[in-house]
Length: 209
View 1: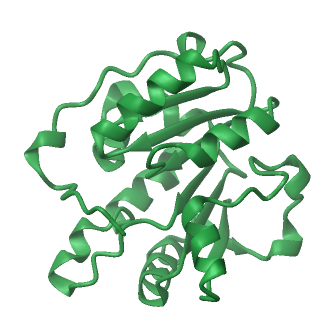
View 2: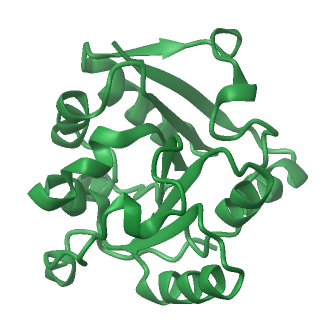
């Protein structure tokens, strides 16, 4: 069951102080991946444990989940994984957080809230202004991964990202997954559930040129 939180609430206007990469990670020079809407972070915990050659940041709008994930990461002494609370659209616009976009080698949006009603489309995480910001801030050759089980949402995200001429679609054969953020193709909990229900998953990869 999806637990919707209104990302446009003024509760998310105030941005959590974001530490430097040196403060977050044991080796800040490793490639960096941002997972937007990471929920409780189970996917990232598995990724970070299996792939120590990348740093991972999970960003989630539900504060309770992030507090639990942060405690778990500290208890496990994981130095290539960090969690941030907040609306990523607001975080990305903040001048002091600009380095997150500039340093990110890739970014994923796995099964984001679909917000089915048309009047709520403005609450969807991927918006034209947001993609425009990414086009100006992310480094060349950086990647964006989207994945959902909602066809309407997939078409919406694909249209918005593809409408920005900076980003180009990639085929699965165009990327070397062994060098990407998820070399073992670990699945999120949502993805596992969708597969077990024999439902279709829609996904696409984009590269910044």
